[in-house]
Length: 216
Image (cartoon, rainbow, N blue to C red; front, side, top):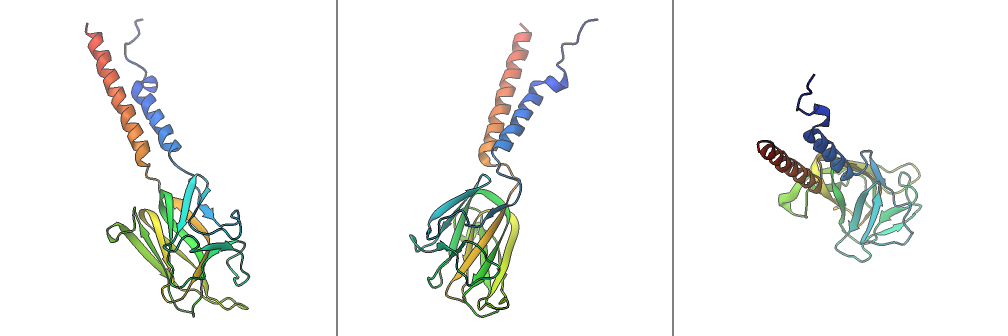
């Protein structure tokens, strides 16, 4: 019996390239599990600007008053923030966190040098700090744990992919944060999509060339 000239679907060039494309997307992604930046691996006394990398995701902590806007340390003034935290003694200083990959959500623990009820604010941006790039915002107020003097709490945000968060305690002089938990967006990075496009383009050229020579 003569064998068909068709390729088996499982061995077609398209299937092969799509498999390659899947590998490229996977290679361009960081951990799918929540990634936590807790500053415990940072040396006490380290100041912004600095970058930490966990699970393939990098987070750069930066302020307008660097170097030295925020500092890593382990104050004993907190209950829910433990180990090393990131804090400042400067008044009304916003903290920016720039992520190397787009996020779908972020959460963190905070403490403010304020009275109870003063909001802690988080603004999320996709790209540079600009009103046109703002994705959304969140606010939260802390409570004073028994035996302590400063309000502590947690804040979270989820929405369209974003790469920058800006933190503020507008009603108080300063604040501290800990356990920044990031969930990376499932949307492939542009570099991965470009690689897929190149692979598919090569496939089209090769298929056309094969059809041309088969008619000679």
